[in-house]
Image (tube, rainbow, N blue to C red; front, top):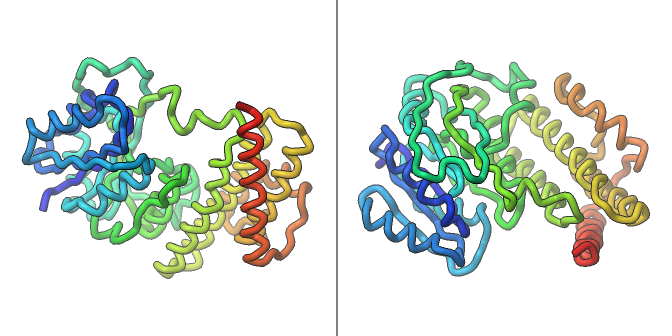
Length: 348
C-alpha cells in the first residue's frame, strides 16, 4: 500500500499537463502513486500521459475513458483503483508545491485526523508553464478545527477537494456525483462534517490556474447546469442519513445546503434574459427547493443565519413556503431545466 494516491482527471490539458505532472512526480514524499485519467481528450493529453507512464512505470498508472464523462466520473475511476492509505486530488492544469503531500501525510499521521485541510493560491493561465518547481515554507495558520464547535469555520471552508488530504478508509465507498457541477462541495462538505474534527495546515501549497474555460467561469448567460445544485443537495442529504449524522451535524449541513440553494438564485438573477422568463424560472426553482426544505428561510445555527440573512431578506418575498410532493418536485424540476435549456439555445 502506498502512502498517498494522487488522482488527476485530464481533459484536453496538454498545455498545462507536463507542469502538473512534474510537480506531482517530484514530490518529496516518494511513496505515492499517481492515477491519471484521460477523459476522452482530443488533443495531445493521452500521448503525454503515455510518455510519463513509460518513464515512471512504478509510480504512475493511466486510464483512458472512451467517452467524455466529466471530472466526477474520472475521479471516481481513480477512487476505484486507488491503493493508497490517503487520497489526494489534483486538476490537470494546476501545480502543487513539492513538499505538499509529505507535509500533509505527516500531519494526518501525527495529528490522527481523517482529513488535512490546506490552502491554495491562484495563478494566471500562462504562469508555471516552464516546469518551475517550488516549495512552500510559511504556514499561515495550523491547528485542530471542530466544525460543531466552530460553525463559522465550516461555512467558510472551501468546497475544493484538491487542497485537502483524505483518509482512504474514511472516504469508504462515497463517490462524486457524476455529470454534475458543484461536485467538489457535494463530496467535501459531508466528509468534513462526518469527520467533526480535522487539522488545518493553511499554506499556499496548491496553485489553482484561472483559465477561460474553467467551470467556475461559465455562468454569465443561462445555463441549466446551475440547477445541478438540486441533485447535489439531495445526494449530500442522502449520505448524511446513511451515515446517521447527529442533530448538530444535520443542522450544519442543512444550513449550508439552504445557503447554496439561495445563492443559486443570485446566479439566475444575473442572467440577461427577459424578466418574465427569469421570474418564471425563479418561482419554479424555489418550489423545488421547498421540497427539500419546507423551512427554506429558517436556519438552525447562529452563523448560518448571519451569513444567509441578506439572501433570506431578498428572496423570502418571492414565493411563500408550501408543501410539495415528490411527484410535483420532479415535474417542476424537469420543467425549469427544460425552460432554461430553451433560453440557452436562444442566447447562443
